[in-house]
Image (cartoon, rainbow, N blue to C red; front, side):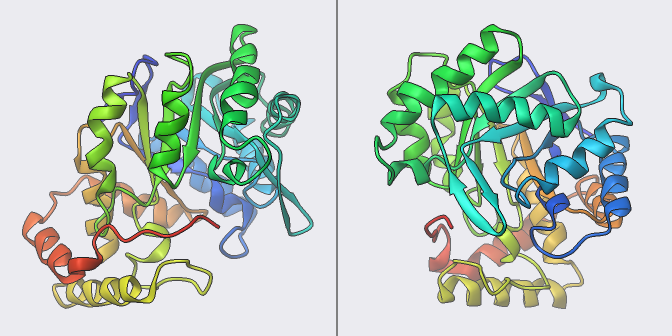
Length: 315
């Protein structure tokens, strides 16, 4: 496993990291014992960054992950969770107030069985953009509340997450320098969208550690295909389907190519993928340790063609 420096945090993070959203049964029902095993396999394979959120499975992911973490030495992993996006009884809720942010961190630590969070992110800030106070509330209230917890030693580093790169940059530009230490962005550095690459100079100039997520673009780049809820426009879905079939004909699963592509850029410190299946974790670890077929990458991106970089609203 290759390790890279996460911005100015000083943290050395694995090029491929473990996203725990699947532990919440977000995509389908899970076997809890197998899900916990998936965490162990990830760490045994060299992944040291684990990312979760209260929102995933409406608190379930944190609870299941906590059962795994209670069996592991605290110095064996870097733990990231989030504030701002929640849910109960199948209903999504949002609260970006400073009070709720601090309460949320305490509740997450309880569920996870830890007394310290390495990375705390404000989750999907674009939802606050449409709420009273807009993104300015993230700047004036949410982030200062987390910085206060940092001063108390409860969290080590503070960051933000979103699908929309423009929102991430807006908040960074309106915060005191150094407030935002890490950024988590998804679906913008993968085989069908490399928009994140255009923003690397910006993030590096601000000393911000970058975490890339969803190398399969939420299922677009998979033989299983997109779930019914996927927000991607139909032309992009169709283009990715053709690319998937091309890889199949070559005997090279598109999932393998996608994982290899996502971790190959040394300027992106870490890429998150999520699975509650330990066999999938082992398979992806094997994928990234094999050489990538860059000629096939070019063929896939030619097939995707003018749909490259097509994005969508968050949901």
